[in-house]
Length: 342
Figure 1 (cartoon, rainbow, N blue to C red):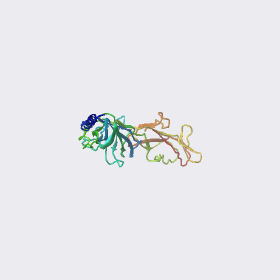
Figure 2 (figure 1 turned 30 degrees about the horizontal axis):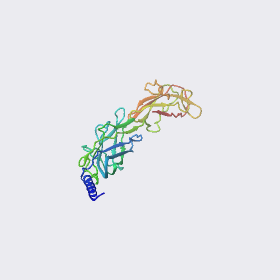
Figure 3 (figure 1 turned 135 degrees about the vertical axis):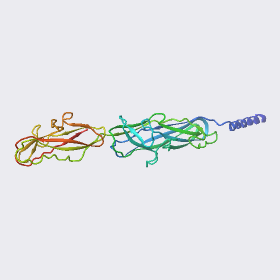
Figure 4 (figure 1 turned 180 degrees about the vertical axis):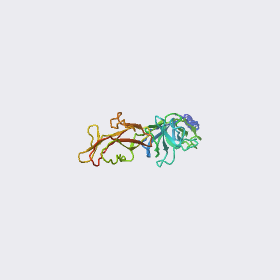
């Protein structure tokens, strides 16, 4: 090769280098997407319940023959949800009857910072995320994770049922971001915010569901049930002796219940009897109605008393009767077991 050819080759190489250095930076769109696991609360009858879900967000930059660092500034927003009634504070779950149960979502384990939405007038607190990742050869990516902290606060008057709030519509969640890609020989600059600086990214959502439940529950109050006393009778029992007592019951709202009474400790077949401990008995009966025509037993859907819980105390009257009879002098008693089915 002569000297002229060598100079020409060197000039060509310099020209190519100048073209590479002076060429516009190659650009390619940066994309980001997010997924959230469902938030599942344990059952509650009014006490505090906490739960967590996991957010995963990935940003990727491909198609660039560069060596540098991509920068992404992101805002992650969660709105009221499809079943949330349009409010972020308080948030809520609902059951099949549209009964509400309060719940809230937070960005911190102490559950003091509500996870809201950028631009919301009530709770504008979004989750900020910043990505900074290498773009080598033809591309690069980074995944960041965050925890969603949920709480059902203490509350009274809850109705039984399965509760949920669906964050599954496009308007229920949102990621917004701006990005800056590296040039051929440099790195990007972090955009000023998720809405300014750099280049705009395409917003998207991340569907998930919040689930909770209130189980059916009933409690007798007080325990034990107050005594039904027939009093003292001088001489023979010549007329009906009627007395009453009451059973107190508190059941979760919308809980169907039935209350039965067994036949006691001294029954003869289906006849309830009080005993005096010396082998003598006084037959008696318990009824569900004031006219004493409906015997109170413990066969479900037959001779029990049924109703639906309201969340408040319910008082049920037990009507007792001792019919006319000849009885031996003494003190008589029996013990009845109350059976609550729900």
